[in-house]
Amino acid sequence: MSAKFSGSLTRCLAYLGAALFIGVSAAQNISHGYSLGLARSEMAALIFAAGSLAGALMAPISFLAAWNAFRNWRIGSGLVALTLGCVCVIYAVISSLGFVGTARDTAAASRNANADAYKIAKASAEAATAELKTLADAPRGNRKAEDKRIERRRELDKKLADGLTIMSEHAGTGAADPVAEAIASYAGALGREIDADKLSPWLTLLAVVFFEVGAAASLIVVAALPDIGVAQKLAVSNARGRKRAAPLEDVMAALKDAGGRLEGSMDQLGARLGLSKSSAHRALHALSGAGLVSVATSAAGTLVQLRT
Image (cartoon, rainbow, N blue to C red; front, side, top):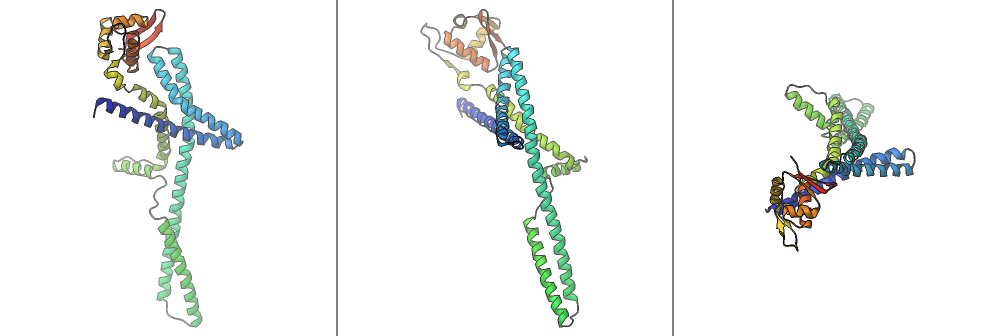
């Protein structure tokens, strides 16, 4: 598998993962926001849902903007973006807690109800079985007594059949929170006692953190991936006779020879690097995207510095 194909596949998977993270976060936030607003009116529900969607989308974008701003020493812009991102994530976490917590509580309640139904049906079936055995062992009586016994046997047979049906429907019903129970069981085997009921809310928080941190950081991860095509070679045209293509390693070497710092117009920078203006622009921004240099606008034009 070529490096270019491998890099493209990685980037496609990263974009897909980021989209899924953001989509899941947005869906949870919209659902929670809509349910909050619905208590007042349909219009309020739509407003809350729209705001929740905006927050879910802006959280990863804000953190990406902050990351890029800090890398280029735009501290003010970075702080604003970081603040907005944190506010969006806090709201998203609260919304997700409501959504995930409700889902886990509903699942736990359903499992508990099934378990209770199974226990009741089992007790009823066992009682019917015991009484049927007693009737079978009892001595025969007169006709009236036998008629009553037959009628009672029919009732017990139906009761037993109903109980067995309910038991089969709810067979295999486990604990209210199987994951918490499993972790508590493993911890017990290691000599640590953990209350599954107390562990369950923390598992809810873990799911929320997974979704929201994944969504918030996903675009930064995608942006941090190297651009394989650009990293291999910059193909550019140059009417002035300068190099038509330059490996990024050559550009890095030229920057190091210049003391790690160059400043001037893009034409001047290109001349120092042995590139055309457009080639220099593309090379420097490719290195900036890879986190190897910082590129900022200064009074003298463009300031390029190697990152340490």
